[in-house]
Length: 148
Image (cartoon, rainbow, N blue to C red):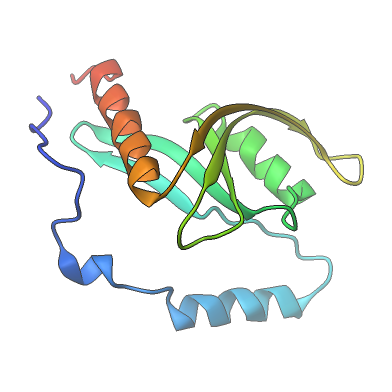
């Protein structure tokens, strides 16, 4: 049975103020500089649920208009889309918003640039709006997941 949730605020304040890991960033940079033939992709967030356990959604953030979906991201999204929904969030101000949320449907990695099918589902004004939407995603996940 899922635990009741009163708020989606972070309980652990230490986590709230963490920044990206310098060692992880160095690892990625070294990998990127290692070979032009070693392709990779990463996601910005994997939303998980503790109870019931599982993946709620995958989120990739893009700065509008300069970030485009790459072929390696299309390969990744296509592989992960059978596990959980993939949302592309576009914004031009990371700190304040607004944000446009797209639900990824499918993509073809072969053309350059890759062809991506996505539906714009929301326009979020600011971070409180975005966190409220995330809370709804989590609530929907809990309601739709059967616990053995």
